Amino acid sequence: MAEKKEKLFDQFPGVSYEEWRAKVEADLKGADFNKKLVWRTNEGFNVEPIYRAEDIASFKTTESLPGQFPYVRGTRADNDWLHRQNIIADSAAEANAIALDVLGKGINSLGFKVADAADVAVLLKGIDLAAVEINLNCCPSKAVEVAHALVACVKEQGATDSFRGSVEYNPLRRALRHGDTAVDTAAIAGQACELLDAVAEVKGIRCLDVASVILANGGAFIYQELGYALSWGSAWMTMLTEAGRKAEEVAARIKFDMCVSSNFFMEIAKFRAARMLWAQIVEQYKPACDCAAKMMVCATTSTFNQTIYDAHVNLLRSQTEAFSACVAGVDSMVVTPFDAPYKRPDAFSERIARNQQFLLKEESHMDKVVDPAGGSYYVETLTVNLAREGWKLFLESEEQGGFFAVVAEGKVQDAVNASNAKRHTDVARRKEVLLGTNQFPNINEMAADKISQTSCGCKCGCGVEKGPHALSMKRAASDFEALRLATEASAKRPKVFMLTIGNLAMRLARAQFSTNFFGCAGYEIIDNLGFDTVEEGVDAALAKGADVVVLCSSDDEYAELAPAAYRYLAGRAEFVVAGAPVCMEALQAEGITNFVHVRCNVLETLQAFNAKLLK
Image (cartoon, rainbow, N blue to C red; front, side, top):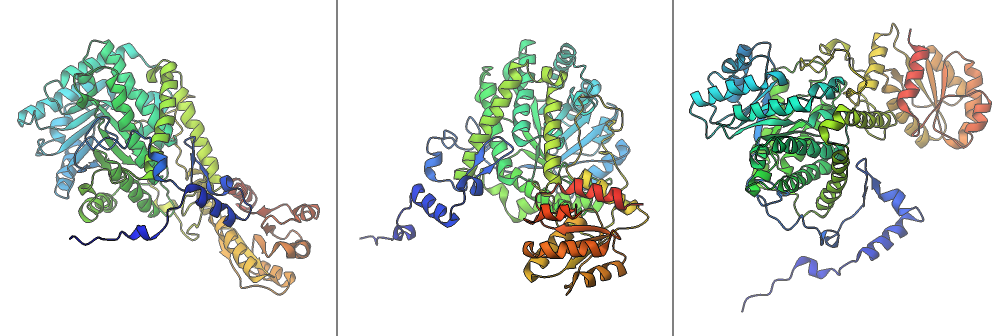
């Protein structure tokens, strides 16, 4: 008789959600559960602190397998994504040499910028087109010529059946990036049909680009990138099926170039939701087979959250992003080099970017597991919720005439710019944290000398005058970086002196907070162990040449210490109280106006200090 094995969790009684909730509310000691533990996302829905099996019991997303319609769990039976590197060079010959070099270092997908169709043969010289994915980015007006040149190279190598790649035809680039809203849909449809004819002999070429990465790097929220990407893809389907093309032909030529940000679980959910919704959209056009509904996605790590100061933190951001992308099952991936915000990436930063993907595949073996997040109560719930919000935006765009129409009217750009502005406000208030920029900065770092590039480096005319509906494209850190660069350019670097006194725990905590606060402007910080009297502290501050004196103590002691220190300082330096004490109104009546605390707009406060202190 087989021995009965006892399961570990059989020893513990089941706990209902109601029991768990009651225990948590007891531990909160009267605090509001929803305010303390429920997170309201920028995507328009709440995230609970815990999810259980019953939360996903009714979900249809858990019923399919990887490779099965509607492809929420992936379009393939494996997770072997392509490692893509976008080649940056000054000439086609130089780009080819770089490409040949990186192909020997593990890259199997290349991205090129093409100035002229004649450059294609030079770019691809010596590259095995049967083994390497090729992606060509060019001016929309040259896309057909470039496509013909690519097809000629593929046919010359006899790789017609095995080639994979794309010609990234994006006629909305100028409208999005520069606000040029003259969108001629009839001309676009005609050119797109020419493009489909040009690539007809090579099934593996995708030529209708959905470049939602532009929106995400412009500051779009995740649900906006999702909803607009779906609307953009649907616009291609509608435009070209109405032009007489078969649904399966059009769908097989669409490629999604999407972004991936550091919101780890939300990004996993975004790609899963995108595949599911796209499959259902394509299905409505009645293609000959379900396989036409498979979404092909290239994910590029974000530039919106990259920083110039403490730039190596960009490696942590992009590694998290790359991890999200591979867990989500994208087809190919680009890791943006960490130094991209301030210079042309060099051999070192590009090597690190390549290795970030290799770590995931060769050391973590993420390619061996398909949809590892599938079945997670949290990720499945995020997938459904994000799909719902993205779908709402998709329907809204469709009701307004489709994606090309809302771009022509500037509605997409305006919506994304509003999100960009909100995110900048959240960064200014530290609701959105950029490590090393608005929180825990490297106070003594200088960055002005390392900046050799202020545009995006894409040679797309970023410096030209923009219309009123152009995407902002301002990185989240840009305002804080301007603040610190102004400090670096000043004739004198302001000194901030921590006048620590009284309660030991509170003065240490507030000195640390104030150090981080003023460090975001690149000021010199002078911390101290503590003083017996405010007069002693003020004298020490002035002896050090302090421009700002920050009183760090407890709320109870501020009522007496702050007025005494303020009067003794007598305007010889800026006076600041660290915190928002109950006696704030009384202190303001004494003439004290500067307080730094967690509810401050850090950016605006420091901009005001810069205006006073910088010479």
